[in-house]
Image (cartoon, rainbow, N blue to C red; front, side):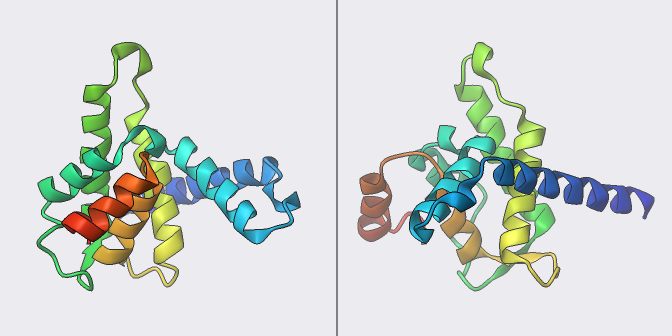
Length: 158
């Protein structure tokens, strides 16, 4: 029970830290909302190291974790989401040279907290499969053409 409370406290601190860092970048001076949103999402993408995960590795992670067989309206709990993110980042670290390794635990924590803050505003501890896949597919690295080709031709994501 105490451990769960300390986990929540740490999650809140990490979430606040991410939002404070974003505020320090002063994105709010950008007048057009679409550009402002794009800059904020790019900041989160780079801060969570998702720009290093390409679209094909994200598809592989979805398949490895059995997300391609789940209904889009099905809900997954936060611990399962953490497992999925762990597999994504540990596979990424295997592909990166030893001189460019990332801090996996920090990346998982930041992305997990961002996703929960974004999609679980009522604190149920669950996210829909569709929202999770949509965010990860959008935020991963790769060409937009590859993402669209995969979505519309091969039905990899959805």
